[in-house]
Length: 101
Figure (tube, rainbow, N blue to C red):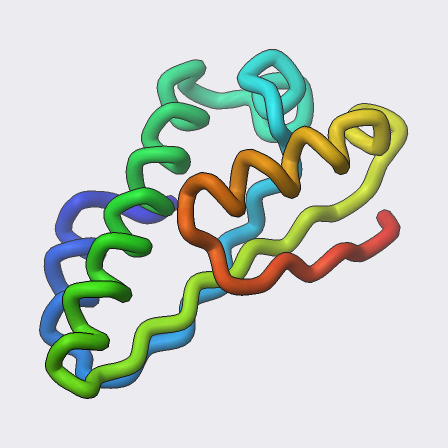
């Protein structure tokens, strides 16, 4: 799981491509798929937002950061694909990779 220490270290890398497995548009679906601490969904959203901000900051210094997500399509989340696309676009994600489970 990504943590604040990782996010701080990413700031020190000049060229970074990061792929986050994040397969839910809603907190309830995230909890069904991943379980664990219910706050993890909120942390993933904050982390993606922070990475997006880092991306724009580094572009001003001619450094590259690309943020992508993987959405593994299952019976639990297939109905959220459109909502997911809007969510990650708002968060500043560059690419989404879809995969069937």
